[in-house]
Every structure is written in structure tokens, then in C-alpha cells.
Image (cartoon, rainbow, N blue to C red; front, side, top):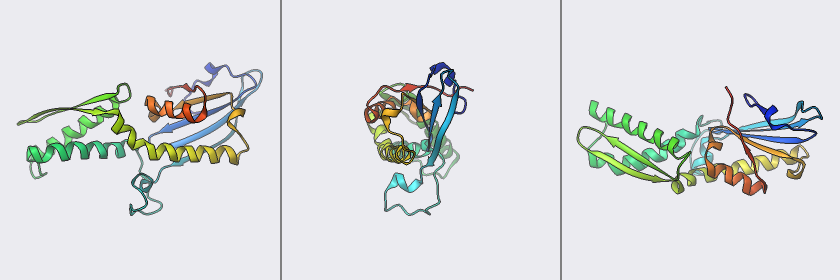
Amino acid sequence: MKNLKLKDLKLNNEMAMIYRFDELELEITIVNADETGKLEEVCSDSFLCPEHDMYGDDYEADEDELQPRLNEIVASDLDTYMMDKYLRELGIFGESEQDEEAFYNLHQSESAVREELRHSNVAHIMYKNWYLEITEEYPIERFEKLFKPILHRNDSFMENFLKGNGICVDDISKVILTGSECEYPFVRAHMEHILGRKCIHMTNQI
């Protein structure tokens, strides 16, 4: 509920679910509104995704080890994509100042790709150093595959959360999606598909 202008929703004797998916954290809050529109929190819970959830059962990590940011996981995939494709070709092995600059520039490129994929189906990897210029396309389809395990995990968490609080989807009048990962259209489309309804997307208000 933090930093959201929920008064703009004009809820009246209704229940709403706020689904905040931000980096690797999922937070779900249920609110009720009386006839005046005043909101009251009914229940809330959050979940932080362990790193091993993303990499499968064979990934060896302490049970309490948590990966703090989803974009770091996404970055690792993009880094692998670019590093495998380009670093050998560039002859970069991390042993010189030029190598360090190349790694930094590639990291900046994949950060730009993540932002571009919030608004487009294809992003452009652009990287230039002193001996080679690279332009490559990174399709949204590959990017979406990274999210599938997380989205399925979120679905299970939401189902258990609602069931544990005696709430069914039909009790909820409005669903509000917020958080950085809900900026991706395919995340919103997934939520609308599993909930069977149109959701409201709101950005955090600072």
C-alpha cells in the first residue's frame, strides 16, 4: 500500500487486492473500503525468493541465502549471453584495464536492455570498445523465460495466501498491480490470465 494513491480508485464497500512485485519480493495486501472510501487493511504477507528457486533443485545454496534483486538474475543471463558471444571474440580475459572497461560497458548495456524490454518486444545490445563495435537484438521471448519459474512461484504463494485468509478471487472487486516487475507487459498479462479479469496497473508515487 506504501506510496500508492489508492484514493484514486474510488472504492466503495469493496475489497481490493494489491499485488506488489518488486525485484525479488512479492507482497500481497488485501484492503476493504467502507461507504466513504476509507481503506482498512485486512491482511498482508510478503515473500522473498531464495536464489535456489531460480536455478533448480541442483543449485547448492544455504536455505537462508536470498538473492536481493531480480534484475541481478536477469543480468546474469544477459551477461552470459553477451560474454559467451563476444568476450572470446574480443579477446577479453579480465587481465587489463581495457578488459575492466569492457566488462563495465557490457554491464551498462544489459542494464539498458532490461529497461528497454519494459516497453518493447526487442531490445538492442549496443557495445563499443577500442577495437570492435557490436549491435545485437535481444528478444522479449528469451527474457520472459527467466520469469516463468518466479511467476509460477508467485501464483502458488498468492493461492495459499488467499486460501489461508478465507478469501476467494470472486470476493475481490479490484486487483492493483504495482512494483518494478509489473512494469513488464507480459507479467501483467499473466496476472490477468490467471485471475480471469482486467487488472489495474499503478506505479509507486514518491
